[in-house]
Image (cartoon, rainbow, N blue to C red; front, side, top):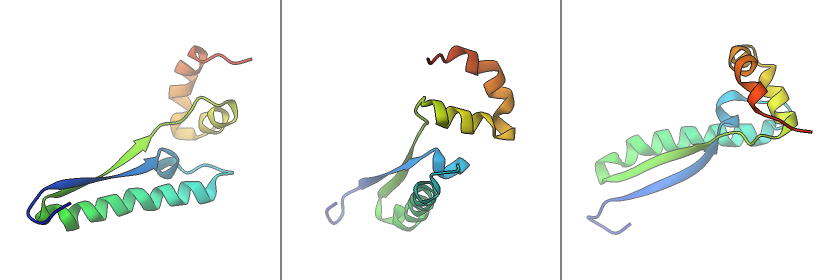
Length: 89
């Protein structure tokens, strides 16, 4: 990003940083930090015409991750209606 020009920074975060999940504590903590860093930098760099965003990637349909998410109380309703669409052996 050169002087007197606009630009942007994209940081990679994850849905795990917003939800928190067991067995991936360091990963979830790092992704939470990344999301908060992007939010803070967005406000700091806005006067300099530099946009900062965090891309929050969703979950991959891996059986053990889906089972952990399904057990979360606030997602139980969604999974009870949509999990039948996902099939695995």
